[in-house]
Length: 345
Image (cartoon, rainbow, N blue to C red; front, side, top):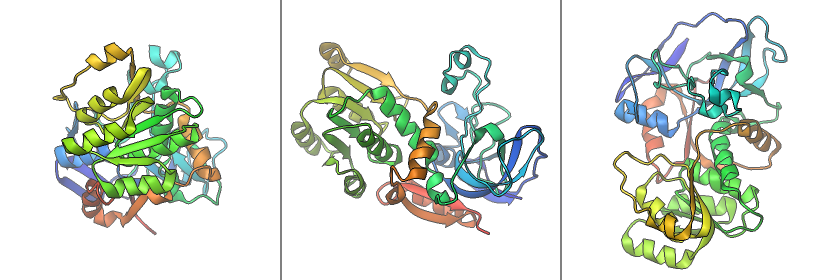
């Protein structure tokens, strides 16, 4: 089979890859669609994601859907031809966090398409990826498999919103209108947010999320625009910081009401410099959000039933042979939100 393999920064290729034999409890898929995530971009651009450094060739991709091609021994409830969304998490099930039900914080997590461990954990950007049956969530035949590939990032958004504890009618600020920020805005609206506000440095991104969610939007970036935005926003009950930019977290702290709640969703760079005094004088809570728990199944449910329409956020689709072009498009945050890849027929 063919696979999308990263070897080092800017060293990406579509190449032959040996197909593993199916073991008990595993299924082989025909890939339908895979979404390029920010971590995929980091591996492509830098050869690493934080401390996860490429040390061997690795198949990318952890956002994907497909159809079951073959089932291994002991698999029940899944049959060839079934459409599925794939949860890329592979927790150990035995560490203290797993035993406490916090499998997303597993101390030995094997997350697909990740160089966190060696040997690396291969991802789903292959013609026929193999996954554990327990990772598969069956989809109705009516679902667009391209939208089903957004189940993983939407689950991240749902988890962040759950941690935000949004009360009905609460005022909610989302900083950043990239993929996760846009999906967080959708999830916040679903959770009952009243006044929903989104900020970003790119007007096209704001226009898109405004059209989907009806959010109030403000352009930020330069000091004057940021001051104007903060004056218009005032104080809010909840902030979800999805940009991963320290200036956005500073803004969140300035905009949060006393005893409000800030959820940090975006990864801040190691060199980020922050002013946290505002947290103290407001007694505001700052909590991190990481991956997801049972929200993956809920994401699949909302997408499958049409409770949310994420189609506007799929802004480009490429064949896998144009992977480098697709990665370039995904890096263009002004024009693209979610870029999808497929091997086609």
